[in-house]
Length: 455
Image (cartoon, rainbow, N blue to C red; front, side, top):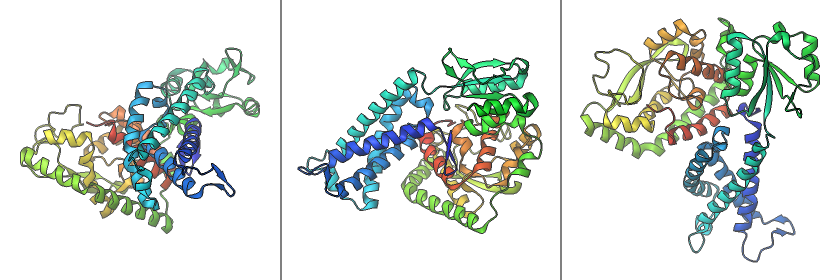
């Protein structure tokens, strides 16, 4: 993993995105070059064509990023890769038109006299994508991106660390060996198959409590990373290890930004994004309101008490997706797949997350941010605070419509699900930045498009 403007990115995926963008720029530049013009003029590239090619390559690349083409779990699965590639190609069409209008390029010239110019650009991008993915598959097949890891530890904590290493595809980690502390090797030349040195050592617990400092320094001097299981989860999986979190430790270490300029920029970000989404979705919101009214003639909106900043309650606004008397007999309950309380119109808008859009008015009101931990109901907050240490720490920032936990884990419908999502929420609070918020907004497009975690 590497950190770019505060956002956590796999190094392999960043390199793949750069390779795709560079190759796409070259191919699109050659495709758009005026007839008879030389590839390189006296002053270099043809300026107008190079500028347009750069805008198109970056626009398509960002669209592909939003659709999820740079998630390892998608890159390594042919079927998911094909589906996401087709979706990216469709989504890139309006994105290109919007970018051309924004930068003042002639859309009619781009379309060409036969109206196939934009289609040729997208086909060229697909060809570039196939070329880079073929090379990427060969590299992966030969294990050149593998990160062999030695796990030191025993017991339940080691089992959790082993599950984190073997269950996550996005870091290309491979468990080379697992040994108890007493059998840990005394030299860094641990090899995999007799030819590859390990990438790093993960200790199930504090490093200084399990290994002598001299041995740790010797490993690190040889280029082998030595991390505790908590450090590994935070640095490479993007979540906080709750098992290693002592009561009050997180709240003491993390504070929301207090500087007026930080608060102003975040508020400006919230307002601008909210107004833009509201303007783009206005026709859809009117159709949704009409569908809800025609479905069962009940109220269009639904107000529900949620817990916000510093534990203060507020009324969250949503499109109503359940029957009016949905919890009359049962009281507050987790949502479930094929929930019988959901109306026909509600089932559709919940899948596309349209029911969440009215929360924009909460953002404009100031009780929510666009990006942040999911606001929960007081009943569930009390329940989760009793069993999850650190759950109260979510309230040090405003809740959000979307968030790091929402784009990395599906809908939480149990205490155990809430435990996993809490690790992602605490990671976001600790590392939040405007660039991380932007990356979450891009990932939200994928979550909505492929209905990830919808119930």
